[in-house]
Length: 498
Image 1 (cartoon, rainbow, N blue to C red):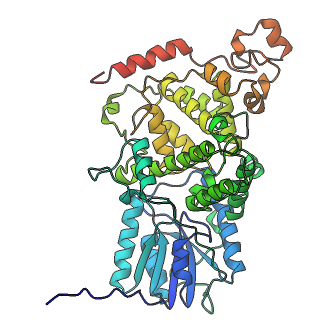
Image 2 (image 1 turned 180 degrees about the horizontal axis):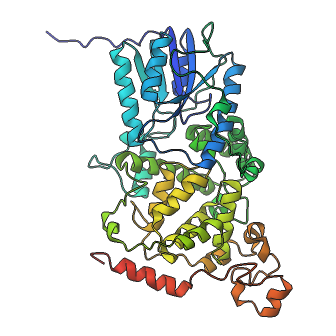
Image 3 (image 1 turned 120 degrees about the vertical axis):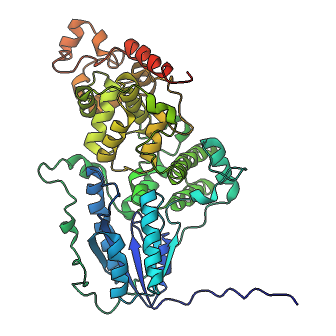
């Protein structure tokens, strides 16, 4: 007699659902929202988590979060709902809130850091024990880390094979539409029987004394609408010639979508399909090489999350353990000069000042300034990662750490440590007219294109005409390039096996 498996029936539609927003602050292409919106009633919640072990947000991320939550709250309200904002331990708040509202479903989109995964697993177990169904979804990646494997079944450690494996899986799914309305319960009580629901300003996310965010306000429009606008502007302009121009900080040559992706205001699926559709329809003058290069940059973000999932200490420990013996130097004065854009290396200083003013830095320049900190100043890459975490609007737990380890040579698929960027030639190659430097280091604006990358080589009369006094109006180089290069190579050779 043949044993027939019981037929699989879909779970009944929930009567009351709770949607937990985290790093997915959008209504479009939000699979957890789609699940919750199918309920008779749905409550939407954001928790400013204070759980033990979670890394606190940096200042620029906190600024962005304020406006991203405001945009999300407005979008939810426009569909008849209300975003409930809480602050505290999500291990306590989410199960308590689900019980308080009598939910039979709690839905969220997955996170990939170790503490976050452990938190989600514990909450899911707590809800299950209470008879509440918990469902999680892929809302933030094209391909999840657990589904991309080597032929041997393990994680991939080199980007090119990783991306080939991803592309062999399938095309990214078509994005989901936003729900037309949010089926809220008849009333949302002011008190939840647990810490009281907050207003957005109660989270105190914005800087006040001092208010350093003027440049951020002038540069960005946080929220899903701002993300969609960025995609449109990118496809209408910088996408043309992207493969050739993306390394040019003097051009508007990149998408600047990183902060919107970091907060989940737009999904990589939305970006992918919008780009492909525009290309196929002839709505952009880019070629296939431009599109594929842009997709590969999205792929690097996917690779970073793959690494974070399989190597949870990515931001704190060398992926390659031999770098544990590297002779880093403690030099607080040099670190401060680097942070403030006062190194005497114009392309480095321009990048660091762009970061401070706008909460963003061009990707090529990120590599230059990171190489300078690590290899010219011999300062531990983790100090740079921490500064970027605090000052980048797109501070991302996977991408930030993976990229710093890549430059240091300590990570997976890393650039060799002995590949040391020459800041002069990098500036001359990628900012040949000095336009980027003039924008962010205006005290050098009077120098000609031939000297702006090497102001210390300018004759005294040229410096005087440009109003420059080296060591006063602009610093002398913090360290000699030739000396720094030889010192870095000697340190690398001191590692065992080299």
